[in-house]
Length: 144
Image (cartoon, rainbow, N blue to C red; front, side, top):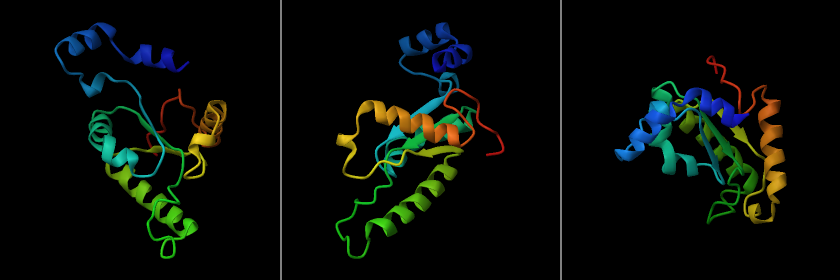
Protein backbone atom coordinates (compact mmCIF):
# COMPACT_ATOMS: atom_id res chain seq x y z
CA UNK A 1 0.00 0.00 0.00
CA UNK A 2 2.83 2.44 0.78
CA UNK A 3 4.42 1.77 -2.61
CA UNK A 4 1.08 2.51 -4.28
CA UNK A 5 0.90 5.77 -2.36
CA UNK A 6 4.44 6.68 -3.45
CA UNK A 7 3.83 5.76 -7.10
CA UNK A 8 0.78 7.98 -7.12
CA UNK A 9 2.83 10.99 -6.02
CA UNK A 10 6.15 10.55 -7.87
CA UNK A 11 6.81 11.13 -11.55
CA UNK A 12 9.44 8.41 -12.11
CA UNK A 13 10.75 9.98 -15.33
CA UNK A 14 11.37 13.23 -13.50
CA UNK A 15 12.95 11.34 -10.59
CA UNK A 16 15.39 9.49 -12.90
CA UNK A 17 16.32 12.70 -14.72
CA UNK A 18 17.05 14.48 -11.45
CA UNK A 19 19.19 11.60 -10.21
CA UNK A 20 21.15 11.65 -13.48
CA UNK A 21 21.82 15.34 -12.94
CA UNK A 22 23.11 14.68 -9.42
CA UNK A 23 20.24 16.07 -7.37
CA UNK A 24 16.70 15.26 -6.35
CA UNK A 25 14.12 17.99 -5.83
CA UNK A 26 12.62 17.44 -2.38
CA UNK A 27 9.20 18.35 -3.77
CA UNK A 28 9.27 15.09 -5.76
CA UNK A 29 10.10 12.76 -2.89
CA UNK A 30 6.55 11.96 -1.85
CA UNK A 31 6.20 11.01 1.81
CA UNK A 32 9.45 11.17 3.79
CA UNK A 33 9.71 8.59 6.59
CA UNK A 34 12.47 8.74 9.19
CA UNK A 35 12.88 5.89 11.67
CA UNK A 36 15.40 6.62 14.41
CA UNK A 37 16.76 4.83 17.46
CA UNK A 38 16.92 7.81 19.83
CA UNK A 39 15.50 11.29 20.28
CA UNK A 40 17.59 13.93 18.51
CA UNK A 41 18.99 11.46 15.95
CA UNK A 42 16.48 12.88 13.47
CA UNK A 43 17.47 16.46 14.32
CA UNK A 44 21.18 16.20 13.69
CA UNK A 45 20.95 13.78 10.78
CA UNK A 46 17.95 15.04 8.81
CA UNK A 47 16.61 18.38 10.08
CA UNK A 48 17.51 20.11 6.80
CA UNK A 49 15.78 17.45 4.71
CA UNK A 50 12.70 17.46 6.94
CA UNK A 51 12.46 21.27 6.85
CA UNK A 52 12.89 21.36 3.06
CA UNK A 53 10.26 18.66 2.64
CA UNK A 54 7.67 20.23 4.95
CA UNK A 55 8.32 23.64 3.38
CA UNK A 56 7.56 22.09 -0.01
CA UNK A 57 4.29 20.66 1.31
CA UNK A 58 5.56 17.09 1.59
CA UNK A 59 4.32 14.78 4.31
CA UNK A 60 7.08 13.93 6.80
CA UNK A 61 6.62 11.14 9.33
CA UNK A 62 9.09 10.39 12.12
CA UNK A 63 9.20 7.30 14.33
CA UNK A 64 11.53 7.10 17.32
CA UNK A 65 12.24 3.68 18.80
CA UNK A 66 13.29 4.75 22.30
CA UNK A 67 13.06 7.81 24.50
CA UNK A 68 16.83 7.84 25.02
CA UNK A 69 16.38 7.31 28.74
CA UNK A 70 19.90 5.93 29.24
CA UNK A 71 21.66 8.61 27.21
CA UNK A 72 23.54 10.39 29.98
CA UNK A 73 26.89 10.18 31.69
CA UNK A 74 25.25 11.40 34.91
CA UNK A 75 22.34 9.07 35.80
CA UNK A 76 22.14 10.58 39.30
CA UNK A 77 21.18 14.00 37.91
CA UNK A 78 19.23 12.46 35.01
CA UNK A 79 17.52 9.26 36.13
CA UNK A 80 15.89 7.42 33.22
CA UNK A 81 12.29 8.55 33.91
CA UNK A 82 13.33 12.21 34.16
CA UNK A 83 15.57 12.10 31.09
CA UNK A 84 12.84 10.38 29.04
CA UNK A 85 10.39 13.20 29.82
CA UNK A 86 12.96 15.85 28.90
CA UNK A 87 13.77 14.06 25.64
CA UNK A 88 10.06 13.85 24.78
CA UNK A 89 9.68 17.62 25.19
CA UNK A 90 12.85 18.35 23.21
CA UNK A 91 11.75 16.06 20.39
CA UNK A 92 8.31 17.68 20.16
CA UNK A 93 9.86 21.14 20.06
CA UNK A 94 12.50 20.18 17.51
CA UNK A 95 10.02 18.50 15.15
CA UNK A 96 7.64 21.46 15.43
CA UNK A 97 10.44 23.83 14.36
CA UNK A 98 11.00 21.88 11.13
CA UNK A 99 7.27 21.47 10.49
CA UNK A 100 6.81 17.77 11.28
CA UNK A 101 3.29 17.00 12.52
CA UNK A 102 3.46 13.21 12.61
CA UNK A 103 5.64 11.59 15.23
CA UNK A 104 5.35 8.15 16.78
CA UNK A 105 7.12 6.73 19.83
CA UNK A 106 7.65 3.00 19.28
CA UNK A 107 8.07 2.22 22.99
CA UNK A 108 11.32 0.26 22.96
CA UNK A 109 13.85 0.53 25.79
CA UNK A 110 17.09 2.41 25.33
CA UNK A 111 20.15 0.16 25.21
CA UNK A 112 18.09 -2.89 24.24
CA UNK A 113 17.21 -2.36 20.59
CA UNK A 114 19.58 -5.11 19.52
CA UNK A 115 17.28 -7.55 21.37
CA UNK A 116 14.13 -6.52 19.46
CA UNK A 117 13.16 -9.08 16.80
CA UNK A 118 12.44 -7.39 13.44
CA UNK A 119 8.84 -8.64 13.50
CA UNK A 120 8.28 -6.91 16.86
CA UNK A 121 9.60 -3.63 15.48
CA UNK A 122 7.09 -3.87 12.65
CA UNK A 123 4.24 -4.62 15.05
CA UNK A 124 5.17 -1.64 17.22
CA UNK A 125 5.13 0.63 14.15
CA UNK A 126 1.70 -0.58 13.05
CA UNK A 127 0.31 -0.32 16.59
CA UNK A 128 1.75 3.17 17.21
CA UNK A 129 0.52 4.58 13.94
CA UNK A 130 -2.92 3.00 14.11
CA UNK A 131 -3.65 4.21 17.64
CA UNK A 132 -3.07 7.77 16.49
CA UNK A 133 -5.85 7.47 13.91
CA UNK A 134 -3.37 7.65 11.04
CA UNK A 135 -1.61 4.93 9.12
CA UNK A 136 1.75 5.08 7.37
CA UNK A 137 -0.01 5.12 4.01
CA UNK A 138 -2.71 7.70 4.68
CA UNK A 139 -2.34 11.47 4.37
CA UNK A 140 -1.60 13.58 7.43
CA UNK A 141 -4.31 15.67 8.96
CA UNK A 142 -3.23 19.18 7.95
CA UNK A 143 -4.56 20.61 11.21
CA UNK A 144 -1.95 18.58 13.12
